[in-house]
Length: 213
Image (cartoon, rainbow, N blue to C red; front, top):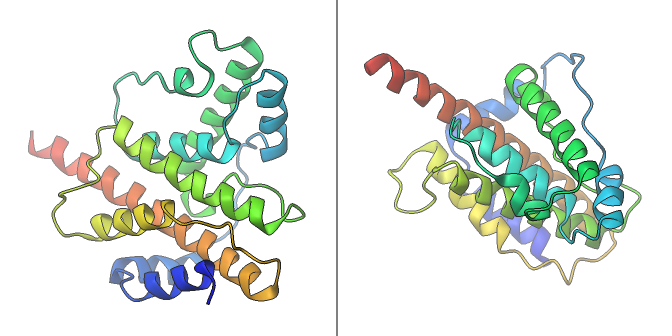
């Protein structure tokens, strides 16, 4: 059995109850108008034109991780992407992505979409980009001072552990067949809902901490 299918079987074995409720709730969630983020191809073109070698999905994952951490400190994440020079074109499109993602998470959380290659790209590229999105997300959490290891048992801990495992996946053997395509779509949805749950839980905890102090 291929890695995509195995990953779904392994993850399904320990999906937290609260996460399952989120999946059910999303199915009836109404669509709303929201800000439009740069597409994968648009961002990739700007990065390529400026000789910046980083996958657009990894950037979006990192932004989502930082925003999920709800950390108000200044994080020089653009330097991580483009280096100290950070050409104007890159700065502008990264800011557009940040603002659209922030609005989406704040106002349209259940419509969150991962920035991934379009469906007409190869499954191998899309699967690799999904792995890089997950790695970027975990990097963003770390930049926002969210611990990834030695956490107390919780739904967030379970979800983070899942994402850590997904980030290690090797998709070199992914085949362009219906089974892998279905597994990819389901894995994208699993990651998407895990990120939504983590965002809600971390922000709710932040509110609780503020009320206590």
